Length: 169
Ligand code: FES
Image (cartoon, rainbow, N blue to C red):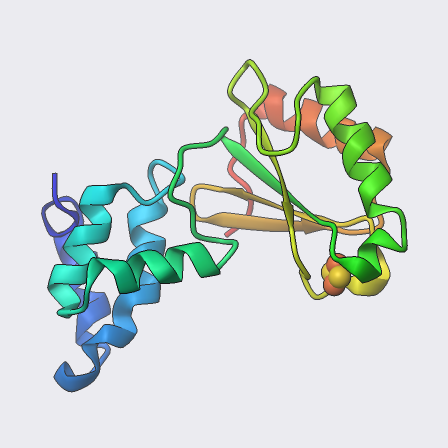
């Protein structure tokens, strides 16, 4: 089903916010909408957006690839993105990531066998003095967790697995 068929009101509302000659600026909110249900932007949605905004699907794919909050592949219900950029690495982010993956029994980029948690390594999340830190994304929500330990993170994972709650938008 196309994005406009799935969310007719939301799509119209988003596009109406921009002057017709600048409708390409609607690409970000449309991508956000497209990602809401499945946690990633499928090829159909990507092409729908390109067509609606009269830009190429390559341009849309470029935006998806550039931003850590957009995804082109399915992942677990919760996508945990740990910053391993240099300032965070100097504060132990690499070791944190390695130990967390070890506790979850997965490698970076993989999803736990219950389909709940995917671990990813990302660049700066603008909290460089608060490492180890990560963002958790699910649905249209996003939460930040700073100054974390592996134990605290595993408690968070256990709570998310138990409740299945959406993270805060
Ligand atoms: S380098 Fe990790 S938050 Fe900035």
